[in-house]
Length: 199
Image (cartoon, rainbow, N blue to C red; front, side, top):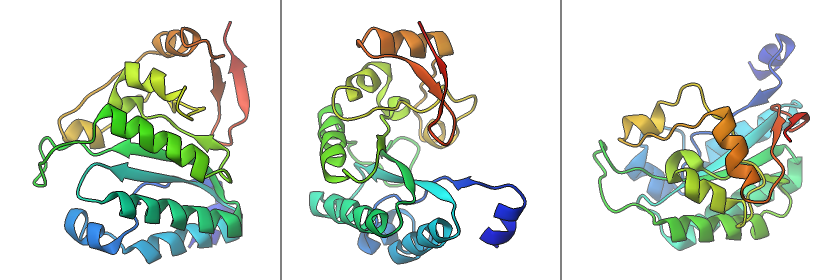
């Protein structure tokens, strides 16, 4: 199927659905999704066909710190074999409007996890900060904790919004957010090629 899609023009896959690559966690938070190994197998198959992907990690639900590290280790090992991940995107669970409920990860926990991800995943070039779940200010702070990408301004976002959180940003606001942090704002495409530099 992936080869047929690639032949039809598909050149990359999103890395959503990873949540935490621990079957204990997945049985609790996403029992109808594939298990951890199947997710990794899909990514590896995609990489082996020449498709690049991203990898995500959702923190702050029911996982332990050890399970977060297990997740990072699995991503790192697969990247060592395939070099197929373009980016890693850690983001935080939003408890509102979910049956899980519970306390959410703090901004300090998020930034610490982001920084550890940058160090541990030294074989993945791009680490994306999550302004969508953390808000603009923490999104800006993420640029000092290992993120070199803030993703898109998002014309439509439904997952986090359905859980009760909503963050929006315009192109001008994103440029200002990055500039005021002393960084150079650039627009990229999916392949991380720069298509526009601001100011």
